[in-house]
Amino acid sequence: METGSPAGGTTAEAEPVWTGLPPRLLRMRRMLLMVWLGLLALAAGLLPGLLAGPAWAVFALLPLALMAWGWDLVGRNWRSWRYAERADDLLISRGVLWHTVTVVPYGRMQLVEVTSGPVERHFGLASVQLHTAAAATDATIPGLDPAEAERLRDRLTELGEARSAGL
Image 1: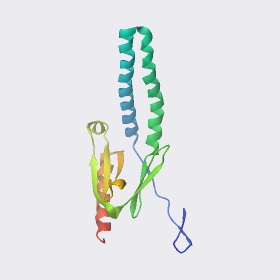
Image 2: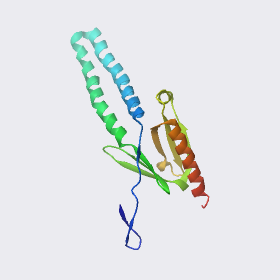
Image 3: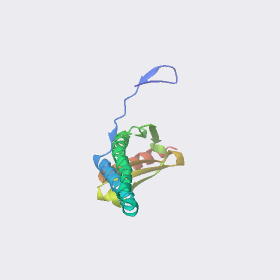
């Protein structure tokens, strides 16, 4: 990628090496989609079907259609998430319709957290949350392997301390 330098010339800059999220995150999100919309389909079909007659059970088709549509959307969203570690900062890219690239300089990181809720732990996943001085630049990388999340936390903390020492 060619970028312009302040003097007006161009310098060659290496393309970042992007890392995607593990497939277990996709499986977890699709399972949650099926559970919640499956329960909604059951309620939307069973309750009206019992109370107003079997013809009203057709309302169960709406949550089932949403489940099919959501299945594809969850996959597209999962594929859009990626991150890259560069020399001076961390890049986080996400989004299908609204593509967002967040750049978090190592020297601006104040806290790096690894979190894992009960569903994430069941699927062997953890999230890394980056806190900076500006609340708008806080960033999260969801659904990492716990070992990768800990490695990333330790590396980012080390780089953050080294870069902020000169400030």
